[in-house]
Length: 91
Length: 476
Image (cartoon, rainbow over all chains, first blue to last red):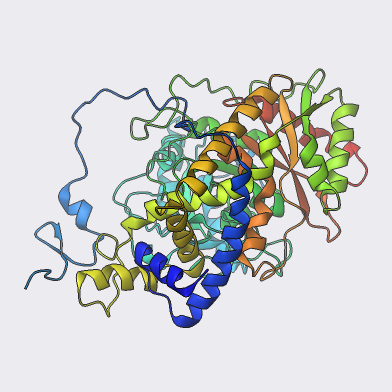
């Protein structure tokens, strides 16, 4: 796997590797993907398979209490007035 | 008293021979003295929980788990308590609601004693990828306890609790149970609610019990199972009768032997135990039936495509905004995302997220993800067909005894350890691992049985029979 490809994956994953890490990851991912490529031997077509055989039984849409707002944000590293707070994104 | 299982302990508590608070105290002492790092935190209110249950028991309360201390894996939420999924990202996270499985334990009078160490976000086979510390196998501290529910399995064999909960996405209950010599069950997908359990791969994850004996395991699964309004993937109209065949013989039972598994087992440490199990089953009235599961050959590649793909999506929520940890060096919103994830995810998690995004990215999606889903569908059909001619299928749980700490430094080598466990998750089947003697280093070897969807009761029938009669066999 080329370094450029790893950098692209970092971007997709919102991660930033050090150059040393990048080399190691390139090798690890190469090995794993090569192994995973055996999957090309599969010749059947996927048919929109759904794991749970009960997945189509939806429940009634009943209004129920949800978590109160203060509980939703309580674990946030920064919160203001019941909202998640982040730095300004527009100047 | 610490060595007692769930049912024995409950009966002693019920009979007034011991109070819940006393046994809870004993476990707490043992955890504090333990050197195996199985536990991340003893819950501060454990004694208080036990005292309250003792009071209720005096007034005639009879829950199925009345007064019994149980340990939960660190990815299971209990309101007001820490749960970190073995990750620095959730180091200070305090659950704001209780998972359905924990609630069910509490409803039956269990004491939720502590949270057990695990591989970060359940990604690993040795509990070496916990962000906090490695857990050592209590039976040989130079070896891993297995993973990712390594803390749970270690706690059970070390008698730090009566039983524990784990989660299993590709073997994370069964493999540590094998390595620690305890009983571990991965239920049918949809049997147990995942509500309030930190998600790894949502279409594969199941919570299940890790116990000292089979009967305890059946009882705990009985408590945990059922439809949950909070988890749309839980099955409706479940028949929960896991103990109904315990005590029955193996007469007339048909045990499927997968020919490709026979070939894979050759030369592995587990080979002689696997062969002995076949002999044992036949001697006790079961018939061995050859079955074919051709797609077993592709199950590991399929698993290492599907699981990382789902993980990459599930772990996108960890962005430095919503959950406790945010990088101090971040200035902009984008830096908050990237630097927080870089700082607080461990290497194994990063690897799997990147792998997941690789197989999901445009140009690769059809070649990897869709192919893997196709393998999944075929595998499921092949199992369903195989179960037309047999009641259960036998496989080893792992390749052998617990490996040395640091022994699987290459990630792909570690992934290949999961060869016998992942197919139950990929096909959604129930599977149990039970101890079946020891290997060359006198460490436990586990054997695994798989059953058709929702046929856990047959697994418990076979497992309890083997548990009761295995002393008959030389070397087991």
